[in-house]
Length: 472
Image 1 (cartoon, rainbow, N blue to C red):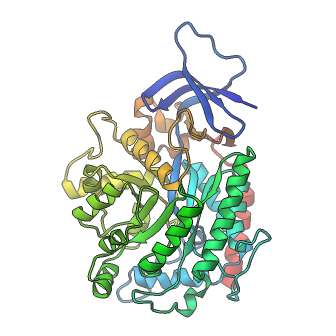
Image 2 (cartoon, one colour):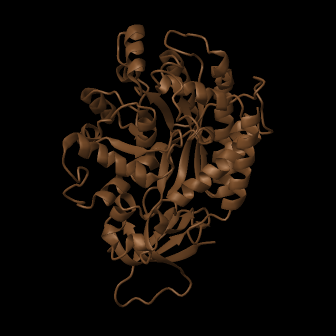
């Protein structure tokens, strides 16, 4: 059954419009968008959405289990702490989490995402095996931890692209996995069978008319963890199964990784990946922190997107991504929460802009001739790029897209006096997250009056899990 909504103000592809009627199909897709004229009467059967309505933000990179580590690795553990020492704490959490724990952690995380303005998430998931190392399968024939993530998404209402991640070696040259990495291991055959099984089930559900809020993609953890020969083999199988399948990979996050790749292959990581001939416009390269301008131009030329997580990259001391160079190459840049040190798209975008201001010593770097409002320019471009990275029809309030949006309350003090065209400037640069009054995913309200209905239960479940993890 089709539903109709009357939006007071909406950010459409052509710009801000007043009195917008949106028709949404039973599957959650926008069927029609109509802007009222002076002679129009309000549609009597339309549900009013008050305030300033903007597209929901896709979160293009998330490791849900790492929410249990946020804030718990900020004491110096070595004379020279780094990404590589932080991994020891991360592996310790990874090896204590059960599938039921993961569901509780992800439930709180997804509630936090929705309250912050993320309406969909790409879950880069490599925690496949049970704690005893067995390939623990749910009734559908895929690992139980995959189902834990999917269940948390169903419970909270967030859109999900599950990215089961192939992870086979500890370093370049086929170095065997360490003992604390064994939960991540899968043979190529196991991985492909499980991904194809889950992806086929998602497509069957969509064909049956279910709301298109969950899909399956795939990921390769990194060039350290998967050889390019295996990437070619797996990509060919995945593309034969589903040509539209999104594929993600970590690449060039750390300088040590770049040096190790050069020693092992004679090429830098992005060079080596592009030589494999597998990257296309369905790929998303995560981080690319240590990329040359030539590499960024080459990535953009493939049509692949890049996802950055400024909060995580800063937390881990990764370095600065050259966002200006990638934009000049007409690259698509998405954002993600990654290690969950921050779960806030406005903060990711603010620091994306602030990094460039600090490096270039000027303001409003990402403004464009067509869009002088930096908040709007950042939000629009990240939402569209994120939609591509997730392989989901989201990111805009437009026909054929899923009805994912946020309603900002113009009466909130954080938006006091703000015209619609400045609303996202306030959200990104003036701490207006508290003004997110309502969130809709696939035409269904999942957040009302600034709070998710599962917030209290999710907090209680998370607290219980963290206490158990500390006791193990």
